[in-house]
Image (cartoon, rainbow, N blue to C red):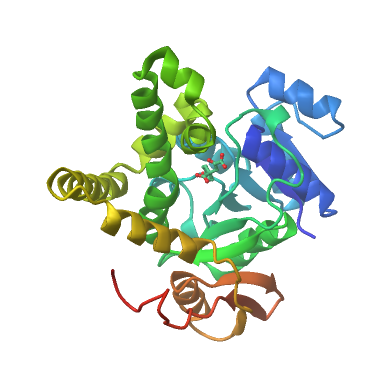
Length: 336
Ligand SMILES: O=C(O)C(=O)C[C@]1(C(=O)O)C=C[C@@H](O)C=C1
């Protein structure tokens, strides 16, 4: 099993280190946070005294290096990677992929790198908030662009699987457009919702219950971390925001003119049921030969169609796909 060197030991990096050790891999980390380093060492994990040391060891042992810092620090860490571990394979866990791919292109051979983004977290941050189980059953995007080498992709995907996740292959741009809608927009909407609720005064505060708590939960996250991911995905988030404002405008118009929110509420109800079906259908399995040409393109197409890679061998990847629900009265093929 390839060793893993994790740079950054906050919630996600700290969980990757724990999960990598749980899977039986040799793994160590480094962090600039004295607090995270002390907590990780106290829990029995190996934290080297500097990023340089951790990377030198990664070079000696041909480890997979995981960049687990927030987006604004990625450029600096990449320069250190180039200096101290110039040939190791590289991945990351950053929630916006295009800027990381751009930085890698500027400063490291892209063939060493495949981007990664585990879709898991909590509203807390730092080593203490993490756990070895954080990624169990979660989805983990492993990105593919024109420069990605199959070896780098395989190693990043194997780490995700070893951490307990299922892998979604995607291009960086498609990944960023999708997470703008299902992760970054929800953080922004939670911020606005919390402020609107807050303006309701003490009575609103004392009456706030489950819906307010669930709808605002993610903005309990450290605002600097939310800023890094939302501002780092500006173009895609603007797109998702325009769509949201259009729909809110239409809902407001309908409520003001006809008194009905029926169309908005029904289409939202149906859309959510698509994400979380009450009775999920048996998944369909597809095998992709990794030794055949165009394997990465095929994986990317599968990811775009909603499939998840659930296992990887030297020469094949197995992906699971949920079959499209049959159309019926509750589930009409279009709109309404
Ligand atoms: O569960 C949470 O608290 C999260 O916010 C996790 C969450 C998300 O679902 O948006 C947040 C950011 C990460 O990049 C991926 C996942």
